[in-house]
Length: 167
Image 1 (cartoon, one colour):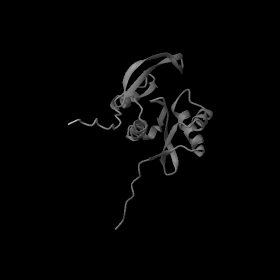
Image 2 (tube, helix red, strand yellow):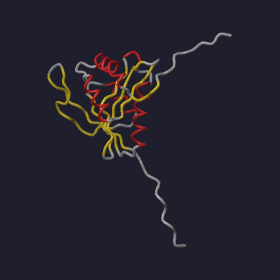
Image 3 (cartoon, one colour):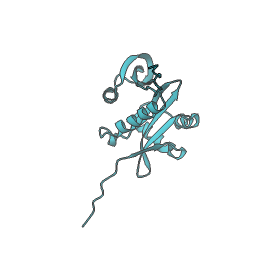
Image 4 (tube, helix red, strand yellow):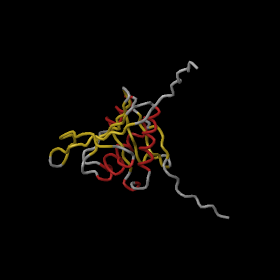
């Protein structure tokens, strides 16, 4: 009998300092105006929630989120092009939303380019709704591009003791 081993889906783990070169390379291959490796380093030093999608010990995607004052802000999320539209980016987003809920945030924000239709579909399927517009937010080839601010509200109802009945 011969066992056939299929490729395992990437696992989600915390980002490490040793991941920064690979993460910055994914960013540079994806965006015209990428974050620098120093920005990723600063996110680690700031203690943000930094995750990578790990495939056989190599980062193939990442997500970065800040959590403060009852809110989460998804700062960056990206997956290698060859893995897009396979559900791994959604797994990463779901993991980050789960962490936000476990941290009892009321809402999660993010910005997205209006031209990024695939990202809009992903965020819409995860329950994000348009909240507003940040004009001239992103660098673009012809100057600046707006950002649509999206929000996802969470129902974080902490278990509270019910009032004792007086009978």
